[in-house]
Length: 460
Ligand code: AMP
Ligand code: GLY
Image 1 (cartoon, rainbow, N blue to C red):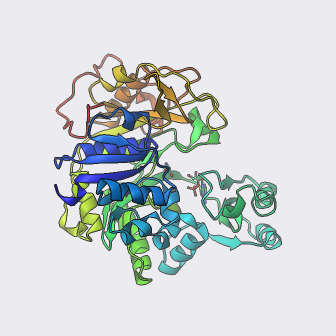
Image 2: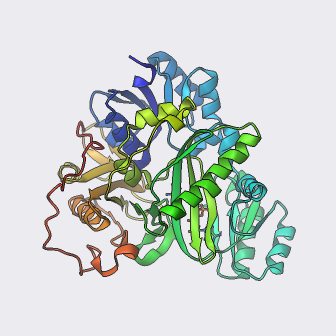
């Protein structure tokens, strides 16, 4: 067996279940240990082992690699990367797909990432950083534009406050710096110009020097239709997102992602893994809102199904610094995913609720059910264990077909309190959206129209 046929996958969300499917589809025939995994990875068959080791338990993960002779680790979430998991793995002789702590500061410290962008000339919102509340308040009074106030550190996606006026910005500064609502993550605030436009996520594989772009994707962060309600981790996504064209994508690849990787490399910090820029496409061009140091969730659930090249081959090339040798291929067509969330999400929500209809939905042509907050109980019943419970991905010849399939799948899934958005991708399709009433309802969503199904794993 070659080294990377035994792989540790770290994390427990939809991103990790989607990664599991894509890794299992590799012609290399991999065996996976998922720590800690979820109900989807638990039901994935003989080649996948859920292990009850937390993503934060570095010593436990290293012991697992040692015991199982694992030589490649793929890290899903940002927390362990910022805490130095990749450094620990590499020191122990385990290749790690995910950046070292010095590179992960790109997400772990917004203050660091703004400073890097300023240094290498990446277009981003105007901003200033403060640890002193009086200085931050004075800045708010001194600028004419609307503001966004951000805790600089990791705050589980909750540390960003988009403000309508100065009073809200002042209150946000107090919340973070004085009341310390996000703890140490709020030691520093970044006060940033509020930008207007459409958001787009641009991700790339990276081997320390070269970046290889993925298609642009669009996430839907607010909880409810029409972008109303509180922000969530993401309620759905689709790719490719037409908000930027091929030339625009290439420009972002060069001027944002490659520029950031080059800037880190100048400091002797190699970036290995996936680099993710969240951008606002403004009237003046794209501007970076944030960097993430990992795949997005739920972007992964639409990007990986479009990948035609073996993911294991790409990851091996990244950890060996050989990405330039791999030509990435992508399927034609589109993918869309709709998240099924627990009642109350993104606030407190019930757990342990029985889930029905998953196998029926997963059996539809062009449909993948991706688990996130699920567990298989001792009674063998699949139950909810978190806010975002699962997402249903539809693949198709175009966005319209992908969405029809995703919604056909989600219509089969039932659990008490379940809610989902009905307008994923509606900005692109308008009245032609399958939930808008103007869709082509007579059209059969059942033929598979010749799409390559290689991203599919049915062992669960
Ligand atoms: P972040 O975690 O930095 O991506 O912020 C979360 C969300 O807040 C983004 O997806 C945007 O919707 C919004 N946001 C962040 N920064 C800005 C900005 N400068 N202008 C407008 N909206 C922003
Ligand atoms: N979907 C946004 C994120 O993963 O941060």
